[in-house]
Amino acid sequence: MSDQRESIQAVRKNGEGDIEQFQTSSGRVLSYEQALQEVRDGMIQGVNVFKGRDGEYYIRGDADGDPSNNLDNLPGF
Image 1 (spheres, rainbow, N blue to C red):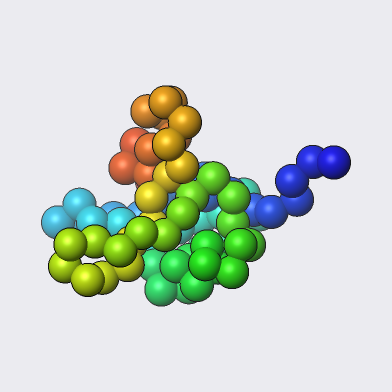
Image 2 (image 1 turned 60 degrees about the horizontal axis):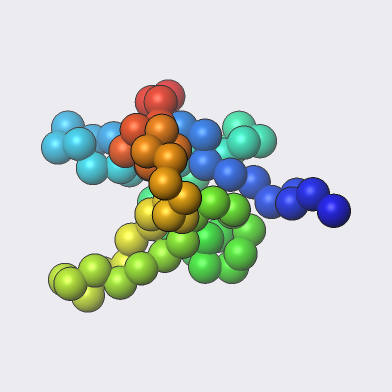
């Protein structure tokens, strides 16, 4: 059975290079907060949530050894 969850296909960054929005495989555009909640809820594959040293939560790609699908390396939209 194939995984029917969406994945992150592209990102939009602010002027400081921080990711602000995500575009999913179905074309939806999510704010960072929306994406964080959907990743936590298991709705988006290939990424996970971690707690940074600053106590904030962040989204990162699953470690698979492929740098091309690192969130920072995804195309912009």
